[in-house]
Length: 424
Ligand code: AMP
Ligand code: GLY
Image (cartoon, rainbow, N blue to C red):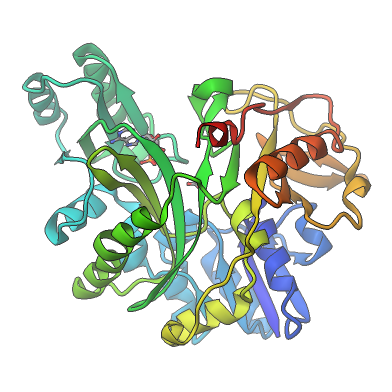
């Protein structure tokens, strides 16, 4: 079997590693991939948004299954392009990827189907948004650009002045481009955040083990929002009771709502949840694996990923159940100093051999490439160091130990990934 993976981050490295475990798979391609992914896959220089070229490549190379890792191509309709050519592809069509592609859509969907989420209003006019804000008594308040904005289109505003400035940034200055043509203004929620990823076949949903991300750049959740600086799995705050509630009132209802709207969802739904005092509520939906959630969830998954993806495509996910190891994993992202704003690239990296033969330790590459035969940094998030352990404490100790194994001059990381487990 030949598999093509589309994307180039740590998530796609973790997907490639999982896919490579299937004995039926004898060739993996990744477009465009990175230095680490090339251990398992032949990297091909086609961009994730070059849909026709990707489909040409899949056709010419008799690829049996294409897995789309990233959000942009999904929201842009890459799956539709593949399906139109009769190619097998894992991911939601454009009309379902809108669950991530438009926050206004997803909020309206939740409201219509009674799925718990923060109270909100949508606006496509800056004046109306400002008028509404002036009637609001409760701050902080949350502003969200409707479209994709690299996880950065969310502003938490502590006062009316900040919120007015935020409307200007999103809707007038177009800080997030056309993603800000429409905006959601929503109630600020407090509580623990949990990420729950799931496989969906249009009707049936099977959730994976829980995880928690750390989105801010600096220790103590200070600094700017990033793509994610580290994760742990499972979340000790995601109890059996919380799971039962979410299965009943959030997960299946979301899948049913999409089907009822004529937008059957096939692929990964990532539920970003807030465990509030009033119960779990949806913060956001994503239409793909999380990054770096995949780097802690997939190493713990016992079920074969290729079999699950095929069951989703064929609409027979109800025949499968997912199994996870009874342990824990922690991922610490090694970033370039200065991320997410300004940082140097092309810095030589050392120490990858330290991971050879070390069971339960992984170095998932995100922003790396080969330059004159040497691996160098090529992005803000450079690698994710994942380690497993019998429990979260041990996994955390192991992961931080392994962060020393990789060296590069401008290495930066958070030192408190998974610290919350001490409070559990
Ligand atoms: P999102 O991209 O929607 O997940 O938002 C990014 C981050 O902003 C989330 O992970 C939360 O930490 C925070 N956030 C988003 N919406 C809210 C909300 N309604 N209340 C509090 N925090 C929020
Ligand atoms: N780690 C959050 C995300 O992938 O959106």
